[in-house]
Image (cartoon, rainbow, N blue to C red):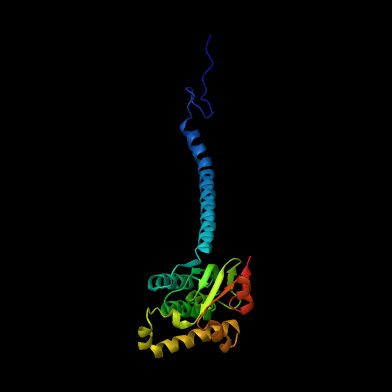
Amino acid sequence: MAGTPFAPSSGVSDPAGQPNPAARSQLAQVAAPVRDLSDRLVLDLIDAVKAILRKETSDRLRDVYLIGDIEKDTARSCIERIRELANDSARPITLYINSAGGNVTDGLAIHDSIRQIVNRGIEVTIVVQGMAYSMGSVVLQSASEGRRLAQAHSWIMIHEPAKWAGWQSTSAAAQHLDRLKEMQAQIYDILAARSGRPLKQIIRDTKRTDFYLDAKKALEYGLIDAVAE
């Protein structure tokens, strides 16, 4: 009996079960756009996650820390970091202080650098963590209006500026008496201006004694604007 003539299959597989070339081409044409779309979605998702992480990192890194004695190295590091952040963007900066004080000129350099940034319209918050003694209390006064804060159990101490000059003997201080008087006047003016206290009271309260205030008393005295609970 004569067999039925074999007709080529129009399916996707050849007799051996493997996709024929035409079918492979059709599958590739369909799969390519789907694969491209999936790749784009994945890349878009990765870019979105990176953007979120960059923002979180940037926000976190706008905190600056002034920890320990105020001297040339800590002052330079603090000033450089604050200026770098200010040049990067106009978003707020927060400086955290935990310092027993240090050199007068280094402290004034930090104070003046922060005031320059504040005068540019960039908000600078200063938060006392633990203590802001001596020159630390002066740096504290450089914050933006209403942005001098202290944590609940921190302490502030102000005293006669002669004690902050860094000289180890009265004879050394005597050699620089004129300069010392000018420094005293500068620091007294800073404390009086930001606290709202009369200059005579600032001088009286700091004369020959260390004047310690906890956070609540510092708020009453005018050395801070709020207690950070």
